[in-house]
Length: 187
Image 1 (cartoon, rainbow, N blue to C red):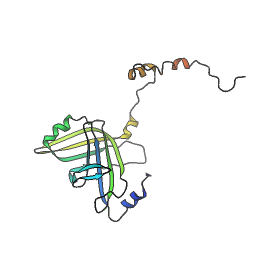
Image 2: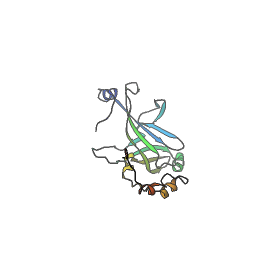
Image 3: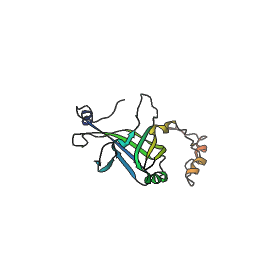
Image 4: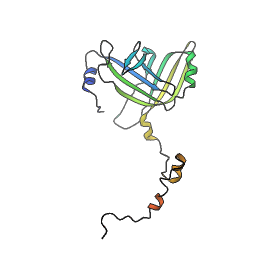
């Protein structure tokens, strides 16, 4: 699939030596979590990503020539059991999760504009506890899933008033159906 990738990005990913950095951002109500697949903190665009190393895993994300929604799973292992209650109390469904690829130079600096190749909404969280630490798996639906949902709106006065009680926008639509409208010059 064709992409609007910068020349710097294309050069970086085709270079002989590329350090791949996967950046994951989960936007929850209480805070935005940022992780990357390296060690230590990584700062990009004034935001700090916490290094999760091999404790951060993501499922393969694929795309096809067809317009279809494909999900992804993000897994964080080694989470202290004391933080599980925080994860259980957080409203996570329908919160945005993105995955970005940033090629790095030998010094750990992003050498091109990172490319976001997956964005979706959190769906199901699975927690596996194991003594002192746990694993959290978060299934995320692609933003394209919205295309498969049925729109239940009817665009009638009654439907509009369910959402906006005092709105009268659609009240005259029925009367317009029997109106004769003359276009252009008359006579």
